[in-house]
Amino acid sequence: MRDLVRTYRWSFLLATIAGIGLRLLFIFKFPNINGDSLIYADIANNWLHHGTFALTEMGLPVPTLIRLPGYPAFLAAIFYLFKSSSMTPLLLTQLTVDLGTCFIVAALALELFSGEVARTAFVLAALCPFTANYVGLPLTETLSIFFTALALLLSAKASAALKLGSLQPKSGQVADWLLGRHSAAAGRRIVVDCRRCISCLEIP
Image 1 (tube, rainbow, N blue to C red):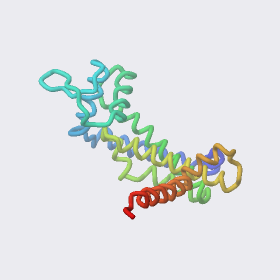
Image 2 (image 1 turned 135 degrees about the vertical axis):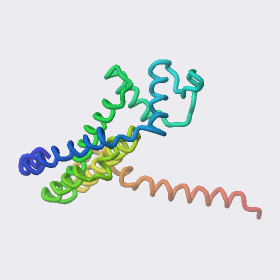
Image 3 (image 1 turned 120 degrees about the horizontal axis):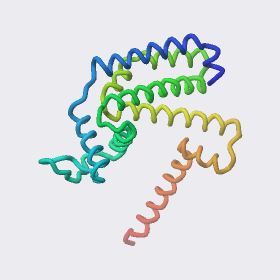
Image 4 (image 1 turned 30 degrees about the horizontal axis):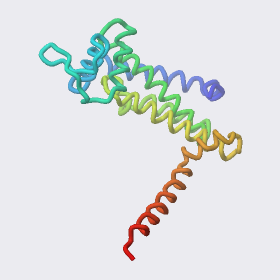
């Protein structure tokens, strides 16, 4: 990946600058902080200051299961690090995460295709308004896209390593799970076991 960035350094530099500018535009000109964003922030603040996964009702934290804990934990960590409940540090952090996603997309394209394709993939990811606008929303989308891209990259690398035979037995088993091989075998065993159970229950 470093060689790729060195080879196309101007493309990566200009696309990164443009990508940062586009995301800053969404953060400072078109932020969308309402609805679910306020729910996540309320849960994060209650978790941080009261130690309770809760929503505020009539000034008191009331325990809730309305949301999963991942994004509220991320919010609470940002609020704690910056000593503020302001959304601006959060949105700037999401900007950094989203730029990281662009590099992961380029790495995935490099793994599957070529350096030229990887450069194009990075430029498109950096300048895509449909994903860039999510940095202006305190919601899960930015992190979801990041981890989805990361999972695809790791799966591609595991698949390539398996084909080259460079994985050790235990790592190969992990790759098999990623590729669904063990899952298919387990599924066949479940079907066989079910048939046996049904045959045992049959009345002669």
